[in-house]
Amino acid sequence: MNIAVSKPDLTIRLCGPRGFCAGVDRAIQIVVLALKAYGAPVYVRHEIVHNRYVVEGLEAKGAVFVEELDEIPPEHRAQPVVFSAHGVPKAVPADADARNLFYLDATCPLVSKVHKQAMRHNRLGRHVILIGHAGHPEVIGTMGQLPEGSVSLIETVEDADAYQPADPDNLGFVTQTTLSVDDTAGVIARLQERFPNLTAPSADSICYATTNRQEVVKEAAPGCDLFIVVGAPNSSNSKRLVEVALRAGATKSVLVQRASEIDWEDIGDVKTVGLSAGASAPEVIVNEIIEAFRARYNAVVELAETVKETENFLVNRELRNIELTAADMAFVNGD
Image 1 (cartoon, helix red, strand yellow):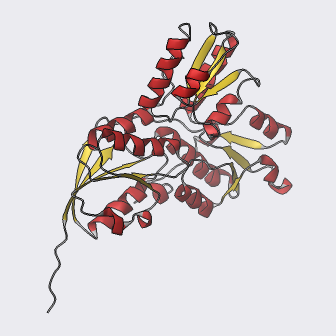
Image 2: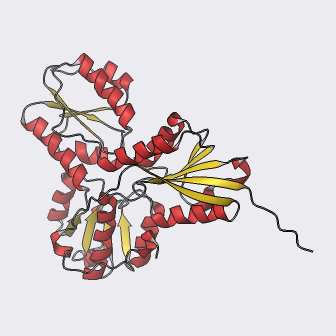
Image 3: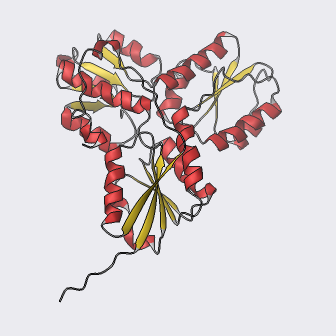
């Protein structure tokens, strides 16, 4: 006789907004449309976005990821090369021009806005302070917009305390777009305290999507026994969401790339689980994780939503007449 084993009850607080932002969506669309327009291979310099699943999905369609432009074989120089959403130093398009490569720039428009803000500070004679994480592709790209020595990177309040500029009265700052809103506010406050004439950018550098995802996590996290953030370990905005969830009151918070990374033995007795996704994490993985919980729990999904995002960034002019279908993007968005 089969005795049905009842599953424990569970509430999943699903955050909205979550997952792809308009800049990530646009970057992936650019690679997909380039493959439709020009055929494989389409080369992509660095990961188009920080997500292995997305990268592998594009590789399956015919994209080839390279670290540097000299890896593109001579016989493929007429094929497009796409620059990632994080932005690139000015030296990269210059190198592409020198090699006679056809390139499509998928830099997020909000990252391009930060580049312009930094260049404006520089044009007006200010030394630029960039608040961000050393080694992140976006930071490398932003610093690469200006002559060497004209940008100083500040990561922490301690860095702000130790910073000794040549001209304390002639400084302007910008920030990486994917930082923690709260952490960055602390660094800016310390810099403004030390350098009262510090000039802010004309608009906030941290992007709307980063802010929105952090705000809804703050609302959803209190009372969560576990908070799961879908994202890659090299994704700055995803790692910040894990930190925000813990600060806001989640008992435990973890970053996972797939459902297979969830340690079911270690979860323990959970009644409420929060779920969000970084700006480069596809919705198909969010669905995969919900189904993994449903297989083990009597799970009810509650939507925790703060705002609806309606932003949409146009792809490059060369690709706007190519049709993009739901089937083209099903590998990340689901059916």
